[in-house]
Length: 100
Image (tube, rainbow, N blue to C red):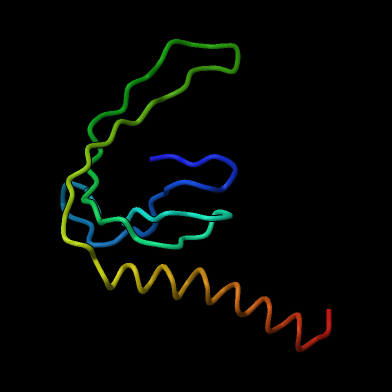
């Protein structure tokens, strides 16, 4: 997982939180930072938080995660598309309506 200049893959969504604070997120192919195609859904577990040695900018923490692939969560895919492209559509509509 990773992206470079807005192209690559990234996780979107945060649903079905369990008592162990794990949650479901969906990995998407992204273009210009926008989700284009879902690759799969994962249950994400927070393994541990390890504190690194102090650096010039102070101490930093690295959070490690474990991923468990699950069946594609179509509801989450729909929600991600609706939120992201709904916001973009609203901005375009308001720009057109107010002739900005």
